[in-house]
Figure 1 (spheres, helix red, strand yellow):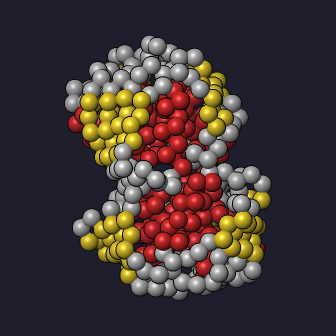
Figure 2 (cartoon, rainbow, N blue to C red):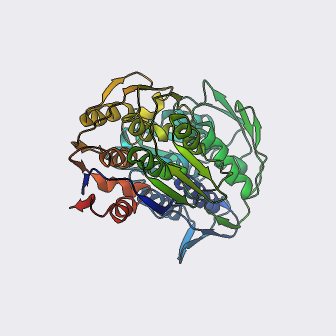
Length: 423
């Protein structure tokens, strides 16, 4: 699909943030290990979360759609294999979190995915599972991953510098083994660890956290429950950017004020850049204005990288984005591809090892840009396209369905003269 976008005038609009992808993944997976049937209300229905649903079904959990909810009958930690090969599609979260779940069983499972997913690193998690007695094979440290458990042991060490999902994978299964997790090196994306712990504790398991250097969970089972998924700040960030870049006033509903999501940091960032933000109990109103370049550390919020680059394209002066080298290991190399694609709007961008330096431009020009199959890049490119002179064509816009299936349809509704979709 190609998104064709023309420069837009400022508007006033109300949109609703989709359910959190991160919370949906974790709720489904943890419910699949619980003893009993959990009902998850308002889950995100996207390509990534469907991959997780299929994966837990393959490992002996039952999932039933009930309107805007799903019922998950867990296996109580007794993981058995219904389908030996599990296709995780484009979902790195599915691959990594399900790797831990698969290691609870005694039968061999192969986890694979699309051409992008099989290039993402998995070796630190594979090595940790091996140290817990699992037999794990990878393709030179990348998927496909062949796993046969059952894991056991009292402690495990894991490198925290590449992906917090490795630690989350171990945390989620630790109640069924009872081991300590020791984190080596610098820990990236700490808020996602907090998010994992939040869901675990909602399902009845207490996690002991020693300053993010060591985690411990006593051996026990998750308890089935009803669970409500909150709105997604990562997905909402694109509407923050649209407000700022087009001088619009947009109200984004379904955003929890006291959310533990790390990407809630977008509020602070856009405030610092000059936007006006009004927070209410379950929504945020953003009023765009002149933006100023800033220096920002995205070590804990790498998914915000494309959004911040988009904002920086029109900010006065330079924006320096640092400590986000781990964004190179996402759906695409986000540092390299952000530099390549946003330059096409006429913006000067310097690529660093761990970030970018962007010199904003008051006059952006339309361009033909490529999503590189990366949902966050596609959606962020669209925000700049709405502020660029002429016409922009975004190739591969359909990848937005990975996390926000209705994104481009929503844009075409609030900007009916400026956004259209072509096959």
